Image 1: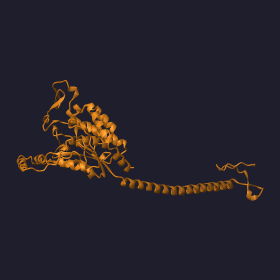
Image 2 (image 1 turned 180 degrees about the horizontal axis):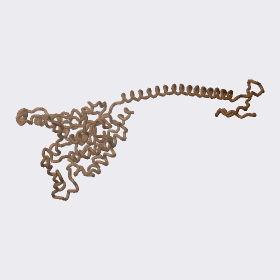
Image 3 (image 1 turned 180 degrees about the vertical axis):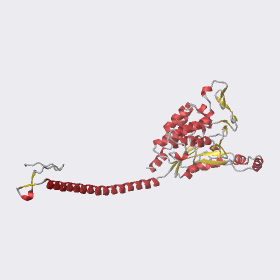
Image 4 (image 1 turned 120 degrees about the horizontal axis):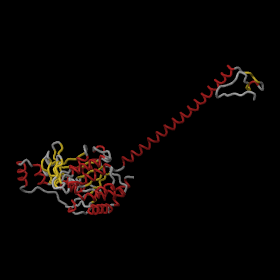
Length: 390
């Protein structure tokens, strides 16, 4: 061909010749104006073709997108229905001091079985283990915490750096061999409890804060813990607020730890009213309940005896009526027996009550092993539950 054409750039000289198939084998001389018109028509044709192709892809994409969204919605609905049909599992952790190490051993087995817990309720040490588990701590992490924690210093608020110092005035607090003895703002330590439990609360707040949790509403698993109001002799179930404060209140053993005061309440260990809160986790919505009971002494519900009305009358005169009535009737015993009947999988590690304050490392390891071995005796029940959750 004697002429060259650069259609992409629209560049043709006025002397350019192109073959016009409509004119047979002849050549037609095109002017610059005609060439530009032809170039414009060609560009329009390209634009139209591109637009048509894009529109085609758009409609194909739109149709595929609608089908994908419909499929995704169907999958989500199916998952939602399946999840709604799965039984909700509640975990109850009873109180028992250092014996709470056994609960960690049980948790190891529950995790191995692949059981997902939907609700947790705990009392005393069970509130601490349960609260940390609800925060996201796994059994292995709780095991490490139990084994490495300086429990004596933690529970007594002892300052190790002052352990060899007979007397130390440190700002608002006076220490004797590291033990806090005088709070210059509140007076001598020991009113209604020998131990303040301050370091316990600080530790719990730190552990939960490191996981981004400072309110019970933000826990990964819905959690409740039980305390006892000494003023009214009634149960207090924490469902909101600071989890560290709630857990500290739940473990405030009367005469040992100072009560936690919130509003008009004077709160102590929840074991005073509900040491195995199965009814609490049932109220949360649990269909199947796994209960870990650390209590060894079995008590029958008390029946009123002759002369006990006089004690209540004396209590009224001394403005101690609620606590006197509690001491006479012991509602905690009846509650305990009822709750044992309400659970589906009852795990009861055989650990003497003498071990309640055995926080030594060897004791902790022994009790964890007992908890794990006891849980493995319920492997068939746990495996059945795990199958229901699939």
